[in-house]
Structures are given as C-alpha cells and as structure tokens.
Length: 216
Image (cartoon, rainbow, N blue to C red; front, side, top):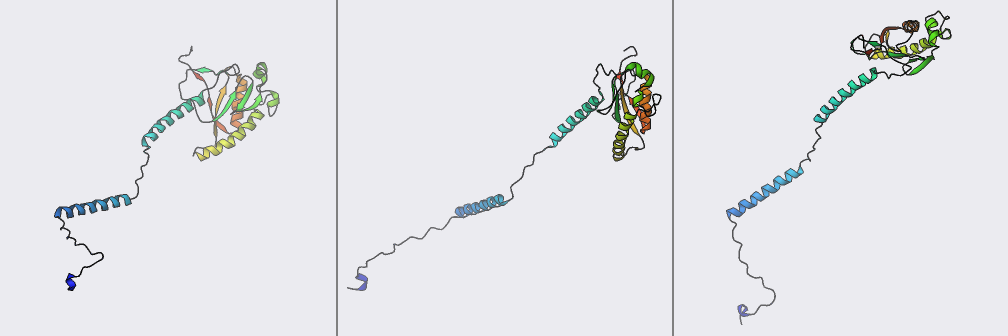
C-alpha cells in the first residue's frame, strides 16, 4: 500500500474558500464610518461650552428700581413728622428742599443737632425775653451764644468739613437745615442763627410746608 493510500488520523484542516473581494460600496461605507467616528471624537474632545447668564436685562431693571428708591429717599429725608411739639411754618415759596447740611431742630421744648438732644428749652414766656435761658448762655442772659448748641455744632462742623473735602466742596464753611416750630420766638431763632455763625456755618435753610396760596 502506498503512502497515498494510507489512512490519516487526527484533526485535518478543513478546506476554506477565499473571501469574496469587497465591493466599492462596502469600502465607501467603511470610510464614511471612520470619518464620522473621527468627527465625533474631535467634537467630544473640545472643552465643554460654558453658558453665562445674561444679566443685562436684570441690570436695567435694577437701575430703574434704584432711581425710584433714591427719589423716595430724598423725599422722605425732607419730610418731617408733625406733632404737638413741632409744627412747621407754612410758605408759598416754591423750591426743592435742601439735602445738604447739618440738621438743627428747634421744637417747643428742646433743641437737637441731628438726632441728638442738645438742651431742654425753658417756658415759652421766658424764651421771649431770654431765648434759650441764662443757664445755657456763655456770658449771661443777654448773650446770643447758646453754649450747649455751640459745642454740638463744633463737633458736627468737624465731621461736615471732612465730608465736604472728600466730595470736593468748599470746606471753609458748612450749611445747616433748620427745622423750627412755627411758634418759635424770634429771640430764640436769632440766638440759634448767631450760634451757627460762630461755629462756621455760613448758609442756612429753613424748612417749611409749601401751600398753594397765602391763605392756605
């Protein structure tokens, strides 16, 4: 028996048929797939986009609100609560109330600088003759200088001078807003003005209630 006729045992490789050649359509689709894959990888590799909140419209709204708040604040600062101890005089004068100056309040019973009480006033009958009273004067009952008021104004003047320098205003003198009761005796009003002048306050604003006519 020849070698060709001898049986062979064991695993014998099966005969495989060769793969058919790829068509041009298959090659084109594979190229397109790879190109799309590369584009997707590049897109995902970019830094994530950061979306910022557009606050331009919000700023416009806040600006409008701020204008109204400032306007309301100016009006409220010029308003004075009326009471039995303080009634403002009436006037037909038309003008904007001053927002500059140290506030000096003269009621029926006391004098204040800002929100601080300076002194208690004597009776109305006594103020007609001696103003703030002999005990509050620098040199007796006939003096026009009110010592407690002058001390408070000097302290206020130092602060106001620094403020005016920072704001670029003339620091050589300060302004005062006088809120006085409508029945304030002339003598007391003169003493208050004189004391203001001694403390380097060169301009005064008298707070009044505006009326439509002289009869109002």
